[in-house]
Length: 500
Image (cartoon, rainbow, N blue to C red):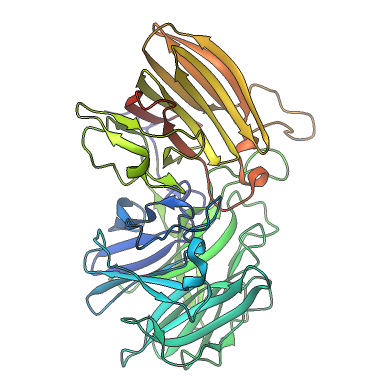
């Protein structure tokens, strides 16, 4: 029996994400007792990971919605391109997913549907009359579907919230788009979600930008078109100018349980370390309860507890089908890898930051090992200009790093073998705090190789180099695998959370 004093305990959902790591812009729907949750995924393909739950706190990935290039067309590449904010809904026996592919921006909004949320999802319908981001779908009682989105281009910028009824089969707007509620007056009103609740229509927005000023605002009216009355308590949810350990909260989506209770999923980040605070895991998904007071939603952050969950995994790549955790930046896993008949992955091309497959890092402190033959690499990737890796070839292991325009080899060890175990890990720093606050890194990234059972540390890096505050963008840390030679094989990878 486990020692109850040391056994892991549930943690308040106010501080613990229900889907940790790089899982931003959550959108949720329910069918019976089953909840489904999807996220934006930016340049990583397949896109839009989707999860299932029965209780809103335990989530299991069941696939990626956009798993064909016809659904997620390649185009403009680079960090934080690709799939932006989305809406997942169920209506009349079908699941609907509306999103924006910034890499194919002029095609307009992208809409796919499915009868099974695990897929397959349909070929896309494009909405070229609705250029912008963050599309939402909502149906009225007579079956009319309304598309609401944030009008935006990359010359003028954001131009407000617009809406129009839409024919979902063709993607044609049934009338010209018209403006609806533009928010409470804070900057960057976006992420609209429209709901029919009782006799009223509610329009919820994300305002303040997805940084420290992020917040949730809401308005209501008697028609989906408005006019809308702004909630007197706006913003109804924010952590701005507070010491809360979870910051940047916003981009919420409401859901009602089978028993009639309400909840909301939202994104947040967990900055750590010295000022200005550094977040490294990306924007994560949290859940809160919702009370209704005078017809307005009130966020109850402590309504849920998140049970302990070991995010570790072992993958021996024993079949030709990759686990849905594995994605590729600006590429496709099938174009980068080949399955080896007796287990493992072979990499058919080599770009240290691009020809890789990646899995989301979900822990602050962790280690991952790759068992490789002939050649192979394991690394930490934030984007193509901020990464580090342990690379094995020609019986040597070297540690390499790229930080912005600066690339450097940090060290080399001679192993003298055709096989190696490569390890990358994050650990707490060894530097003591300074008198007036901690001025150093919150974590250190280690690059390690194993020689005849002995671990050899090759390099040690300040973890702040692999944070959003340094690199910018909308993504988070990824575990990356690759190989500098097509003769190399990654036989096995192990990811283990460490005690923080």
